[in-house]
Length: 459
Image (cartoon, rainbow, N blue to C red; front, side, top):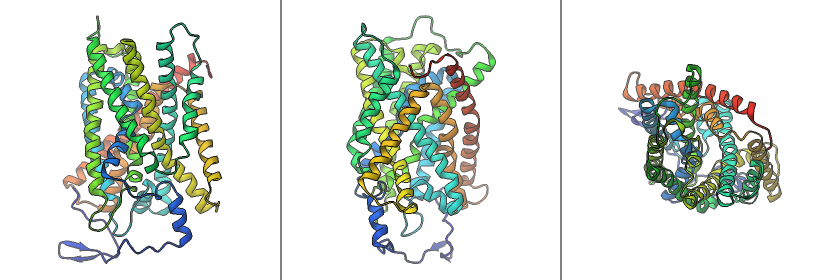
């Protein structure tokens, strides 16, 4: 599927192969000022990452709050459709991730270090920005908002379990406590500086996923368990099904930072970055499978359609284990929040420095990043509807950038032969992705509206 050659107006055809004029990457045409700015920006400031960095960065980006909602998604999808959708999503997103890794250095001497740069190459300077940047921002900011809620609610769960006689505190307070960590960590300069946090987060994600399914299996199949749909009405069942599609899409959101992660890996004509990056991606996807499938299937098997939208809420005992799992979730989403925030910081700082001519400084970075953390905290406190947020953001934003935008870019650049295997594969992914993007926000929005009716704001 990777046999097609990207269109390049300067290429010369020789028989069946395309030859590109020499364009050595070591020739740097940037001015000293541009280089200084690139060395300051978060994405391009460091390129000494190892291949295993991409493994734990991708695990941290992928396995997050979404894994805990998968048993609930299974309850709304049912056994047959649920298993098919889980497997299909794993296969499709691995394929589209491979495409992005391949396209990172498709032009000799140039690297597409950001998702929107790849979009601009495929669709043009202005159109590429308008197609990619809004979707990517919705994804990354959306994930950070959801993780604010996740981190806060996990801390609240720990408080309730350890202090049963204590006065209940508002969810808002716990979200603020969680946010306070990010007012400090947000000032780490680039991806490589958060690699230690990302590694800890990846280990935590595997740990709490294992606890979630192992504790469920230990608890056993609940008495009177039912596997029918949760909703009692047909419209309710259909809307819940749509919302569950968004939950699954949210679970595969790592594509939004994959080019930015690959940008940190060193590259040369002899040893392009796609080799180590792909090795890291495959290792990450094995970990993803070990997290997702047991949690989704065992959790649903044990609790049936009464499972909570966060599987850890369904597990009350043993107390120490559930406390540990929730603390692992907190540590993980701390790392994951930073991973998704870094490209947003890069976008904002790029606009301020390159277009509005602000001077790159610590004060500028201090203000930008604190305002961003405060914004995500405020929205998280205002709309802490965990499951509904996953469904809405999952379909509306993650489906395009994860399931089918890489395929559209691939078709636009490589132009595979009509009706070839590559052509068919990409169009199938596009069709399924658009279906997902259309249906899942409907269910998510309905859940938010229903939750809002009974929810007292800022409690």
